[in-house]
Length: 300
Ligand code: 13P
Ligand code: SF4
Image 1 (cartoon, rainbow, N blue to C red):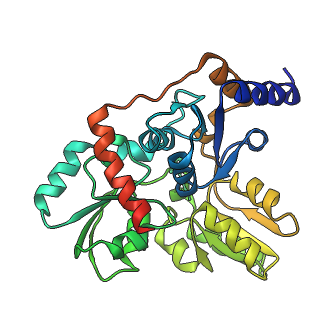
Image 2: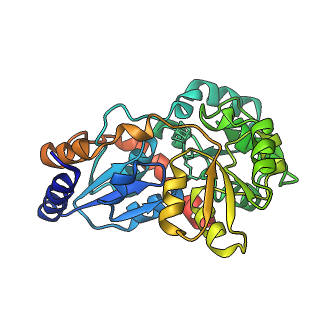
């Protein structure tokens, strides 16, 4: 089927089934066309918390769809590509986290949303790339166990007086963005601002003109007087920036998140038609995880 035909059919099914389609910024360009809302993980979580749609089709990766289910338990949440998962979320286990908690009983646990529901259930508060520093600074504890991303954790550590216990998780895409590459891009485009996602290595973050999550990148590109930007994050973000800020230039220096690209128009159509793949979370875990997500929303 042609893309235009698929888009038409998806829109019809969406209406019939009282569904909303939430789309992360890193999705394929054509997925933007069927979105009710496109955003970063914080804005998407907030949208999910406030929807009264019967069904949420989440075009992103598994932890994002799980977050939507936890925040909107009455909605049926569907992930069109069953194996669209974020490897970083597998880099911390409940067992490891419990050991850290035993070692640091006075610490609060701040877990990046890129975690599974059972990890959120063991956390004091969640955070995203947009609010990590704010959440850490607003919690009353002087010691914070920050999981699982080491790069975001180091960035937070540089912006707080609190003691931060780090973990060794990372993103395969962002951790490959190297300082040399960022410096070279700055040489080639001397007028451009370097904007980096905080999942990137600390040397890249220290060189950057601005460090922010994907939603913040759009706001920065709109508000900053510069006309060119070097974008240190997943490559697809540049498509989103071109769509939102068409009069400026963007140069990607990040690779592709293959998990994000597993969602296609065909899969979204099938997902709506067959109501697959439904996110199911154990009720007790979901209740506890909700507290950590609510704490994040309350503090940010
Ligand atoms: P954002 O919250 O900035 O959209 O980031 C999500 C993510 O997975 C980055 O790799
Ligand atoms: Fe996970 Fe990295 Fe992909 Fe984000 S870009 S979803 S952190 S693998």
